[in-house]
Length: 219
Image (cartoon, rainbow, N blue to C red):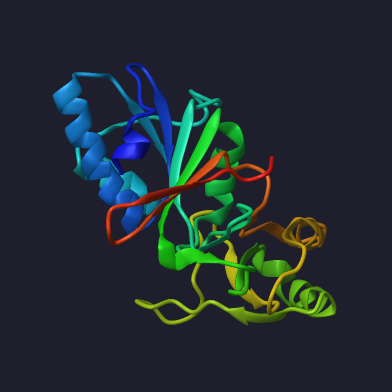
């Protein structure tokens, strides 16, 4: 976490992802702001991170007001040592990818268990509900096995903050993430998918002994 905090300067606007790692980062950010007496504004990527930011006393702003935040901090679900990334386990993939592209620099934080030789977990895909049947059929043509993400605290599917449905699509080991990201997004009815291939500047990997590994993805 401290490695990411080293990038923060007075007056910065920072995009924030979602999930438990980002929640921990918010705690560190709050302490850093108070101890360093700097002014930092944050743009949350989800309603969950918005509520957490308010709870922790962070100054919240919007992408409408600051369309080019200096920095984006987030976590990830899986990465290769080449820096190909899968995100979206929390369902906020579309807003996270928007912030990732909008920010001057994007830094992702993870532990060593998330680093693999090839991406092989299901890819989250955000879908307009009207197009669900068609999209599922087209994803099968690409070799995917789509599964509707069900809600944990409600009956029925997970609904994103954008009002859409999430499919988790299994492709096995992915040989060319860049190409698959493009081909998925070319299907009408798909809003976005969870492969982040060319918008991440650095991945910070933590190890139990305190070591830090830095991965610089291709851009």
